[in-house]
Amino acid sequence: MAHLERRPAPIELHTPQPLTPYDPTAAPVELYGEREAVVWVPDAYGRMVPMPKRLAPPPVLATEPRDLTPLPLLDPIAQRFIGAGIGGGALSAGVGYGIGQIISAAAGFGSGAAMWIALMVLALRMPARTLTNGASGSTVNIRKAVIKRSHFYG
Image (tube, rainbow, N blue to C red; front, side, top):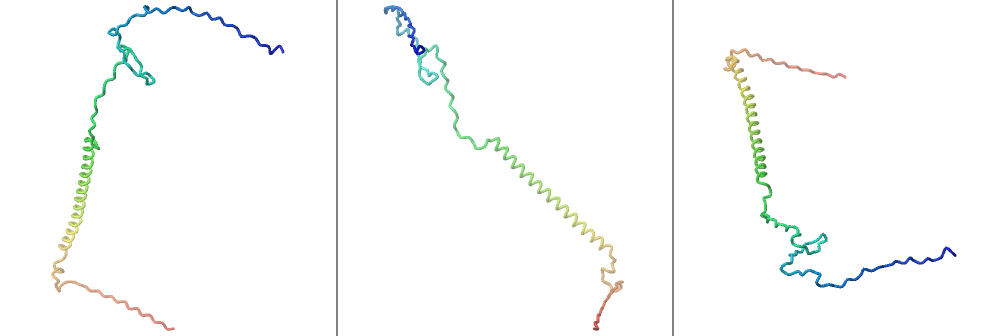
């Protein structure tokens, strides 16, 4: 059982640093009036940490107050555009309707006038004898009668 043999762990040597005795006169004395101002600022994790004032970031300027008065539902310029569009459409519809009425009246007047002119021409071309209903006219009455009888002898 040579392969199950245990070897001892290597020994580490530790040489400690020599201790120096505490010397209270080695630290500089800081007076209250000479001390630098410290401000508390949030770090990346949201904790407040002290920082010398000369190293602190500049303060954030306060934003100007906003005007919170309610605005109209539509912009005044948009209202003007809408009004102009509706007014222009109504004007166009009225003008188109008026022009249509004028054209139809002219067409009706033209056809009515043409009928009256044709009647006047016919009346002027008729002989005066037929207008007076005189007896000396050349009126011919033709009467044709067809009588058909069918007999059945059977």
